[in-house]
Length: 171
Image 1: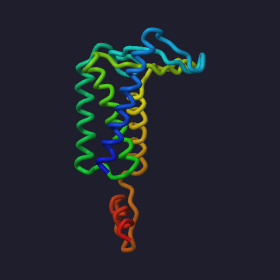
Image 2: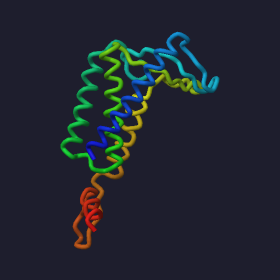
Image 3: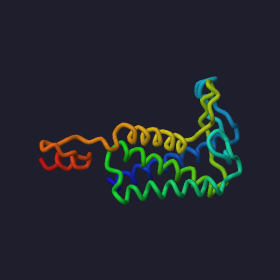
Image 4: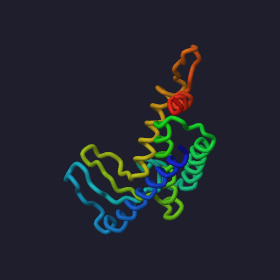
């Protein structure tokens, strides 16, 4: 499973970087392009802060925090702490989002944002931001509702997800 987690993260990082490059190349000169006028726009923005532009100009703090979280996620994968498919998807997305925005912060000094849900005047964001947010929600769901839950085998002993999968594979 670790290879799939890292391949998934790599694919999402490539998608993030391609979309940011396209936004920088095509949107920067015009700044705004309505997809559904008044509802969803592509709007070029250079974000030096965190979500919603908070804590602008704290680049080195964000770089440090991103590196720490990415290392923790990679460590969990390498130490085989990520067994469940939902947890694997979540961790893969968090790694991708962290690395995607980290690349921008190191290379450019800011993060390229370009997706703007204008109807609710929501923050301008990018693919990496979506990965981190969706991954965090999935991980939260996994921790709250799946992690630590086990089923019992015929002898009454609790079985983890990994043991159940192993048993099913060897039937």
